[in-house]
Image (cartoon, helix red, strand yellow):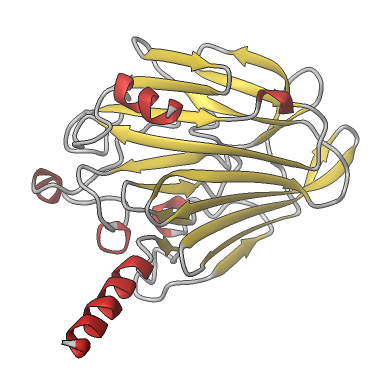
Length: 283
């Protein structure tokens, strides 16, 4: 009886401690060997790296940062909870999607995507480009997976700054954390936000922006309604803007900024409407 109890406790601890997150970074020319970091002086390995940049996932979504002048954050939505990134490599076949796999329903275009980071020079958005070097890294802890993009030598207000963008997903937690750092020690104004398209629904609160609608994506087997939201501390920002394609948040001068992001879609069972997504954010 004691052995059975101990065995049960061990099994329970093993299940509880399981890390339901993962990372993915590899060269298109070598889909077998996974990397922990890769760099480029040009700042653009968009066509060289699998899924165009480093990627991470939790049970409900995968996220990637484009290794290019965009440094935008893109989303892979799932129909059911589970890890798919290593097998799907972001682009499952139409047959796999019909069998219940997720897909790339989200369209970033020329925006920040979901929680992507740029700079603000007081008058306009400044991309994290050109650079003297760009570096991508991925890693795991016991309960998380993370990815980083470091853009070095970005021209900003007559100087050059080094900016790090880190995205972390947590096992058992739907929302991801996005952090931006000024590595050179100077305070900068960061720009982040969330994009949207025509006929999208939008809900805003004191500390969040949530959107819902169909992205004009062309790589998925079908077009599905996608929800996304960014959660932030309003005290960190001096201005909100809407340029017709994205809601932008412009920060106060700072060395660090942190937001949370979340995404869901109509194919899943839990947060499959905007109202449900907003209710989750507000709880």
